[in-house]
Length: 162
Image 1: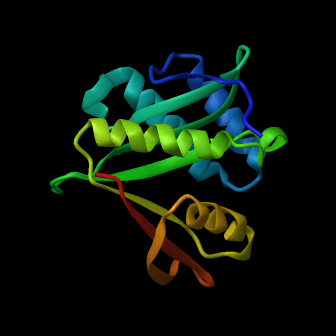
Image 2: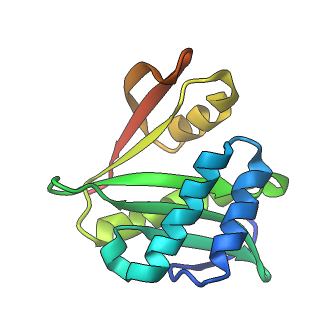
């Protein structure tokens, strides 16, 4: 089921607090990770496109329902990272995540991007996340054992988009 959301690519000052609340609401991210999510928003606000961070923001009414943050990988011809994709836990499994990924991929293609990379944890808590990436057409490219800490590896996914 697809819900009616409005989407925008511009970041506004209120997004810093909204992103912080949304990231915290998931229960997946620690304080340092949450601070990084907010930092990417503030970098975009301060530097615009020169920040290297691009966004797809999804709103339901006046409330931030989810977002994706992506950007080109420096030193590559056309590779991009999908840094964040976060959906309000109250509306997960209703298609918003797929819409955010599709819109980010479309924007990446429009920027001349050819590949999208996603990194996530290998902890059991992230199994639904990894399943989501599989269903979205991403291929598991590498696993770096104990990357984040003992028993917490990094899974790297890739998708050719251009």
